[in-house]
Image 1: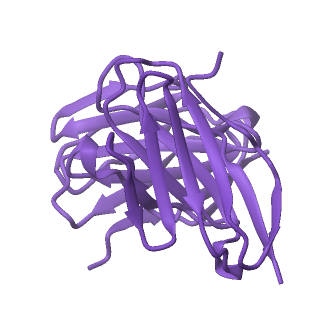
Image 2: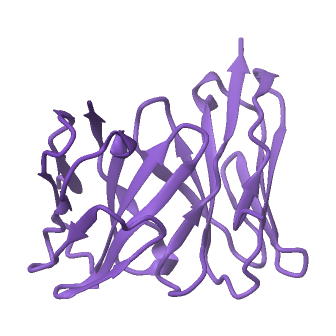
Length: 112
Length: 111
């Protein structure tokens, strides 16, 4: 059972480039979320989804898009990368809010 | 005021010590509470949920005080392997499905 799988693990982008961070879970979880983690800031919610076809914005959504066409996949798109988006990105999934979330191993993104 | 506040530490304790972490949250409507641990450069992992009646899992005890909007985590008989950052987590403002993380408390257990 793979849990939550994120790809790539590391990425360097130039300012203005776009890319998609992939996230897949094989636990049939309805809830999925994307967080970014910056030093001293803790994890901040970017976007989340409560089921296929349903997404909503979190605390820091600007510059990011998401879609949820299947239960398993929840990709995060960076539209035009900026140095301020240099961060560690975590995808997480849950079967319900009372159960907590399972996290992927993260994507370390550097924008130069 | 941050939605979830924790003492950042660091806490440096000897093996075998008992250590307590505290956390306060601002949203009185919060319904779900958790402690996660995060090792350096790794993903957060769920340590335990926190229930109103308090709950224990081995050496770990979590308490919730809804009136004071306060959560605690007690670690007894600390092990070297307990060294990590401990994150207090509650469901935040707006949708009950959003979790808000504290910035974490760093623990180092010394031999």
